[in-house]
Image 1 (tube, helix red, strand yellow):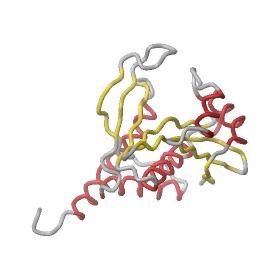
Image 2 (spheres, helix red, strand yellow):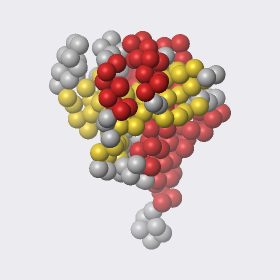
Image 3 (cartoon, one colour):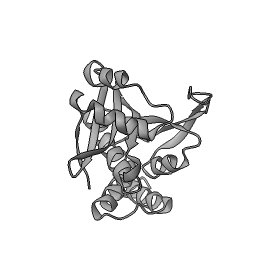
Length: 192
């Protein structure tokens, strides 16, 4: 488990270091300064282990939608659950901000991230052709079902349970089963 808390301007240098190590076309430092100081839609959370910032993520809260703008984890910390914890925390922040669903864009080549997003309820709903400036790669648009949907909540609870136990996430079929079970349990009797 990592300690997750809101980020502030004094965290910019650490954020930029992680950003530069994580992406071939990183956002410039001024972009994050603006996100933290002037963008009223933006919320950024950082994850710390032993006091050091190891990753961060952000959302824009727009009316009833939370758009996940980024998730970045230090390369040395990848595969230890920090990305999952940050994504779960962003979904909690989305609900707290009144969002009914969450969306994101992901490179078509980033299959590992897509698998995580799918386990946590995101589905492919579209494609942005030549979206990324650095290489013209397409982005997949992904969105969750309603964040208050019983199946969505079950997916997140399963992931959170695994993270708390320090265990790897199970395969997609376990998440699908958790969603089916929760969805069936939420249907009022007589409607089935």
